[in-house]
Length: 426
Image (cartoon, rainbow, N blue to C red):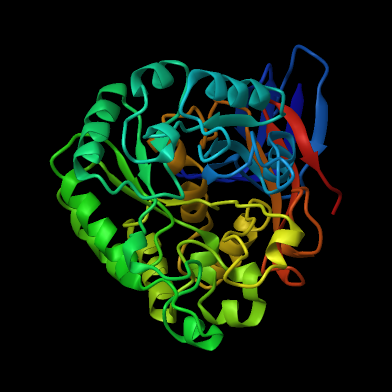
């Protein structure tokens, strides 16, 4: 049994905030009491004094790439889980664009079985279409029954309107969300860089904002007539934020996620960092960044998800138009949220934690993201005042534009299922 003593508990699900002691046993929270109230336990207890550090629910990331199977030189499920634990994430939902893709029971079982070997909760989406080719739906019913958390062809937009409509109908019956990558390839030349100042700097075509806007507009229109939960992934433009805002007024089934890099950086970062800031959708303009923050403030954007996308150093060393898109994000996400959203007054700590735990858990129907007696003992202990230098990672990859920066929010314990899965002295 664990006894967490004198922590400052922040639970967005219940609105509880204050100094509490927490008793943990058999993977669940047994009791929560105000600081100073006696706590008795029947079994031997390991006491961990927290000295007023924050205790928040284990973070939940519903958009990560662990590259397993098929690309394990970039990342694998074990190293991805280690990166998650170091970043305070106790639950992750993997994307399905692996090799082979998660469009069949065998690959789905492989990922879930390997995930169970890790110290955190690893879930995965299955593909919407077979082979991610956008021509034929997978057996969504079978994959859902076998444990797929949701459905996505992330990385490739679903261009066939009829196919999307049928996928939403089937997903609604399964009570599983569909999450969509919103970039129209017909409008893009040299993806990963915004069509504007950045693309002009490198003398390439780039990805115009209309590539995202057009897909978001179409997919929201289709979703309005269906009952499935639809999530707009890694939103990047002010226009898409507004489209989601309007759609949410008409439907309770519309959701959106934003990444830390899209609310922190603009296309200027690509000019400074090159391929380390190349991603899909690309970093855009300051007005887009601010619109995303406003969307997070007013609830238009429900979740913060990292789109953790590891690549090898050799791949990112290629010329800009040849290097793959994506950055790692699990180990810097919480700190960036504290620096950019909490410390600058846009969100409270509770609001930030909600978007990184309770809200994504609710969409994917996971028993996670809250702190309550009888609830899961998935917790993060952190010192929000201390800073750390971004210089090493538990991930196999190093593709981050934040290397060399000092960030606030030092995680001292990540606890999953009542076990300490990450620890560092501070």
